[in-house]
Structures are given as C-alpha cells and as structure tokens.
Amino acid sequence: MRLLIKNIGTLAGILPANMLCLRGKEMNSAEVLTDAFLIAEDGVIVRYGKMEEMGEVEADEVIDGEGRVVFPAFCDSHSHIVYAGSREGEFRDKIAGMTYEEVAARGGGILNSADRLAEASEEELYEAAERRAWRMIRSGAATLEIKSGYGLTMETELKMLRVIRRLQENLPATIKATFLGAHAVARDFKGRQAEYVESVCREMIPAVAEQGIAEFVDVFCDRGFFTPEETAKILECGERYGLRPKIHANELASSGGVQVGIQYGALSVDHLEEANEQDVMDLAASTTIPTVLPGASFFSNLPFAPARAMIDAGLPVAIASDCNPGSSPSGNMMFLWSLGCIKMRLTPEEALSALTINGAAALGLSADRGAISVGRRADLVVSKPVPSLAYLPYSFGEELVESVIIGGKIV
Image (cartoon, rainbow, N blue to C red; front, side, top):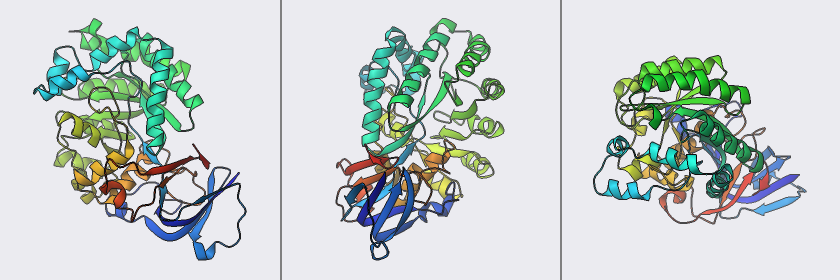
C-alpha cells in the first residue's frame, strides 16, 4: 500500500531519524517544508521533499494537500478514558468554590468514579471508552496511553485493564496500558493506607504482571494521596515485575514526586502544576520526561505547569490530555495545542513538539513515531486549508482536522 500526499502547503515536524526527543531550544527547531510531498509505503514514511523533486509516482491512495498543513499525529501519553458515568455534579461544586482536595476529602473525585465503575459491566465500560478513544483519534491522536485507577480493587483494576486490551486489539491507534492501582486509597481501606499499599504490591501488581496487561506502573504521589516513601515501595515492586514507572507528581503541592520518579527511572513525571525551581533543576539532570497537562489546569482552575521555564532550562517537555471525568473531560489534542501556546506561552512549534515527538518519548516510542522522518510510522494529520501552521493553535475551537492517517491509512 503506497500513499502519496502531494502539493502540501506546509509539511511540519521534520526531524532526523535518530532524534528521540527535543530539549529546550530544540523544541522550536523541527524543519518545515512548503509546497511539499510525502510518500508512505506499507505504513512507513519512505520519502518526502519539495514538489519540484517528486518526479513520477504511482500510488494506491493520493491526497491533494494544497493549502493544508501536514504534521505528525499527536501522541497522548496520559489519559484515563476507561470510566463509568460522569461527574458534572462535582463540576457544579467546583464552580461554587470547592477545591479538588475538598471534593476528594468528602468522598468524591476518584472514589466517586470507583463506585460507578464497580457497578458497570465490562461491555458498558468498553463501549464508552471506545467512543472516547475515537473522539481523540479524530482530533489527531494516533498514539494513546490509558491508565487504570478507577477500580481500586484487584477485580476492578483488572477489569479496566481488560477493557484497555480490547481497545488495543480493535482500534487503529497504538494504545499503551498503565496500571494505576495507587490512584487513591479504596473506601474499604479508609484509615488503613499502609495496608492498601501492601495490597497493591502483594496482590494487584503480581496479578497484572501475570496476565501481561500493562507496561507501566503509576502512582498519584501528592499531598493527600501517596507519600514518596509509599510511591517508592510501589515502584520497586513494579520494577520487580517488569512494569516501568510513570508518576503523577506535584499537581497539588511540591510533593517529592519528581525526585522519587527520577530516582526510580520513571519514563515521565506528569502534572507538575506546582513544580518549583528545584524540581526543574532535578529534571534537567535526568532522562525523565516532564509531562504537563494543561487541560486539567484549564478545567480545574489549577496553576498551569511552568512549561516555559522548563523549556528555557533545557527540558524536553511533553503535553498530554489527562482526559478523565473529574478534572479534564476533554481529550481534544488540537485544543491542548492552543492551551500550550495561550496559557503556557509556548510557540506553536514548541507546543507541536511537546504533543508529538516528546509525547512519543514519554511512552518510549519516539524511535518509531512522533516526527516526519524516513523510516518512522506514517501517523499523520492533514489539516483543512489554513494560511499557516500557527493558525492551527490560534483558531481554537475551529474544527481544522481534515484527515487522520495511522500507519499510512486514512481512518
């Protein structure tokens, strides 16, 4: 199967094949070609360049990209799209002035979702998650990470992970599964947090590993949730069972989550709304990817993570959706591009790098996707006709995705 996209107005996100992430000023440096073409064969980019260099090409599928921007499909490295119901009642509470922590303290938040998920059938969960995943794909995402964490018992956590496996099998996007049993302390363990941590380590992680239904282990290491010491215990256990760490850190306070994540080789530390100067310095000396979640900041009226300061310090910032029912109910990647520019003061090119190559790096997949390079997967977005690349995040809310291509095929 050969795909040809010709007459491309702007081909963006071009990187050397050996570039696995972009740090600091590099995030503004991906190459752009105008009046370009791109050829993919059997799902892989095999050639691109200026139209004057194309010559005669036979193809099974031809797209005319005149006036359009073609760029790498988004890699969303943090989402929670397997859940039951919705939480618009808490939305009203937050409008009235309640904080995230106050909602959680009265038994809402994650525990609310856990109650609903326990009552939902596996089929109901799958059908709802599939609809959400398709919305994300249609907004330009070809790679998704999905977490468990609304189960909080072995049975319900495994139920969530089985749903994620079905999504992996049935959707065109690449989907990675993360076990997040330490998202909150289950209701049955109220006042017995140490025992719950023991349950995660002694029962849940071995079962997840035995069934081979997750690649990563995650912990909500933050004020009011899990301590750095508890997080370390869970990460050590996950490591013994072959699960690589990804950490929720510093959403509510400078919690020590960044440091414990770095210590245990976390692929990424995510949220970082309350990251401080020391956190930025520690990340700069590590290989851990700082992943910011502007959708959660926007929806929950939290501070926006200091992505501008991180990039200025030379970090490889990624942007992800955090799509979930309580604090970020949208997985629209085009809107996140706008938020990265408007609220975090990133250039359109920096924000695109954060959503593509660095998002792929936050999943360990950047050798294969996240950029326009010969040999990388042909996961691409074709915009509607627009005057420039910058118009895409500038015109937030306008539906500007014309086609999404995954593995060289229009989906």
